Each structure stands twice: as C-alpha cells, then as structure tokens.
Image 1 (cartoon, helix red, strand yellow):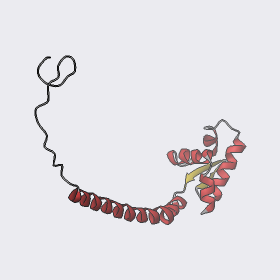
Image 2: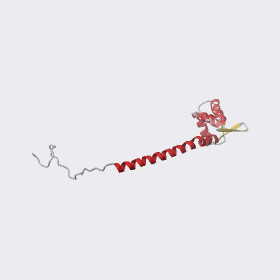
Image 3: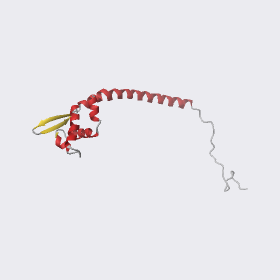
Image 4: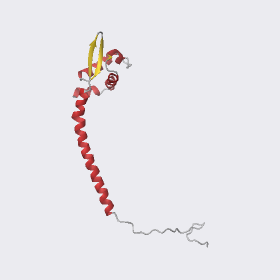
Length: 135
C-alpha cells in the first residue's frame, strides 16, 4: 500500500493516470507526447506506476499499451476512507445533536425582555433639543 501512496505523490504520475484512464489501451508513445520532458523521464514514472500496480502494460507488436488498474486505489478507499468516514459521520451527528440540545436549553432559560417600548419618539427641534416646542 505504501508503494501506491508513493506513486500517487508525484504530479506527473497522477497526470499519467488521468491520461490512461481517459484513453484505455493508449500506447506509451502517446502518453509521452503529453509531456514536455524526455521519453526516458516519462518511462520512469510509468515504471513506478506499474510497480505499484496502478498501470498494467500489454505488449502488442512493437507497442506497449497501458491500462489503468483501479484495484489498488479501491483497496486504499476500503481500508482508510470507509473506516474514517464512518467515524466522522457518527462524531458529526453527535455534535449536531448536542448543539441543537444546547440551543433548545438556552432558548428556554433566556429571560424575556420586560422593557416596554413606546411607539412614539420624542421630537427634535432644529437646534437638536428634545421636545416639541421652540424656546
């Protein structure tokens, strides 16, 4: 499993996987043409992906065709993502319940405002004084 994480750690290898996934059975030369680096450099990345089990190469005549193997990624998902998503789903549901319970308790214990508000506002004169008459 470590080899899969190591293979996925490099941006070029992830891009190779995207190319092969979009075009199953594409020749190595076609994959190499997508990069501005040498063919040898891309072949090294392809070899790392094959060693990790993420790519499968099939020799057909003079060409080697590449296929994406999803099984190692599925194994990682099954081992890590499913296990931890179950944990977090339960923890978040518990947090939601506690927050809603606290909000409900706060609304019951909050004192109501006893101050009566008047609908009439005092008038202001032009000089900024309160009251309705001029001096």
